[in-house]
Length: 152
Image 1 (cartoon, rainbow, N blue to C red):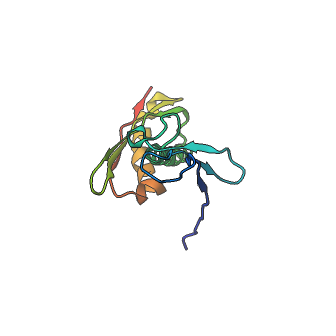
Image 2: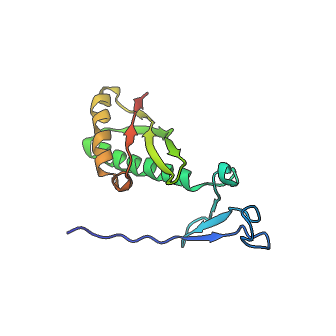
Image 3: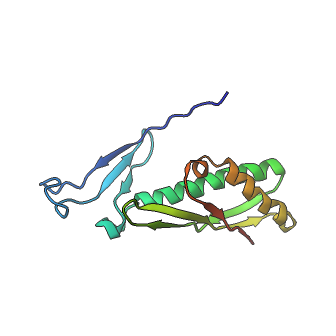
């Protein structure tokens, strides 16, 4: 039987300059993401949508979620297979297209991995397919999530 996991965050808009949303340019896109026992995350919109470039935007959070989920599954599968990963850094990229129904069209994960034993590279590369199939976030998206790993 499948177990359910429930999550809760609070997103609080902090961009009221005093006149609320009296016009499109009258307010900031800033907000905060809060959850019990965790650091507050400063949010905004992408600068293309009048947001603050120093804050995380929803598009970056989606990309980070896909990357982090894949990484966690990958490390789990490597540990189970006896493959020792010493470093893992993903330079993930995503493409979003604006339009009547703006949407992401793809994400490409580009993890760079250092293995204790370079001879494990072929097996380690294969585990990315299993990690992708297991990733809860990737399984929830309606566009391709590709993976192009490289090994040191």
